Image (cartoon, rainbow, N blue to C red; front, side, top):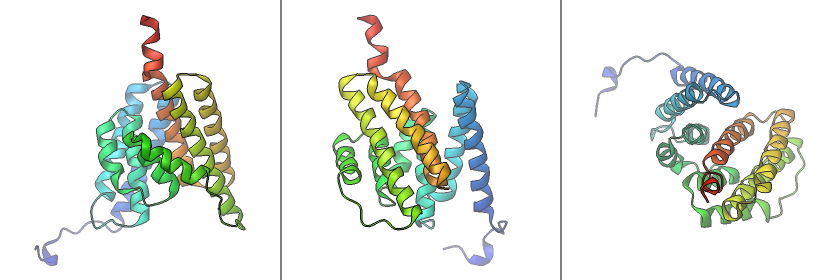
Length: 212
């Protein structure tokens, strides 16, 4: 083992500063993609995911906050088209929250596990909710899970109404997360909207019919 005296003298708070830079890139990348500047937007999302992975994936970063940052990084990878990077990074996030477990199963395309995780959110009655923040989090868990459930329905049936429903539900989730000051849910929802747009463009239900 290396002696602590030989460790490089990193700037105090470097991880937090780099995480801030990553989120600035995420914000810019999301805005560009929302305005159809795909090449530069995807590059920024990829770089943000790469930075979050570098900061928060190490074994020493073993808290729920770092795990959440890995979830955001994995979603950024997925939204930028780097699916294998998303698959690798998302492995450690399933135990953070029920909705993180849903997102992890969705990113891994593990349909059976995803259905189980969705049922945990949508079918199980919540404990008594007193604080408004708890009610907001429960509402966001349910809305995000319902959106993903509609995406799953579209993969099975090809009915475009399910994509429209998923999109509308995510719009509601954005409003709830903004009104309830829930930034973690806001990022999950915003990135999921981009993932939904990419799915719409690349779904077999979209790409195959013109040729048959």
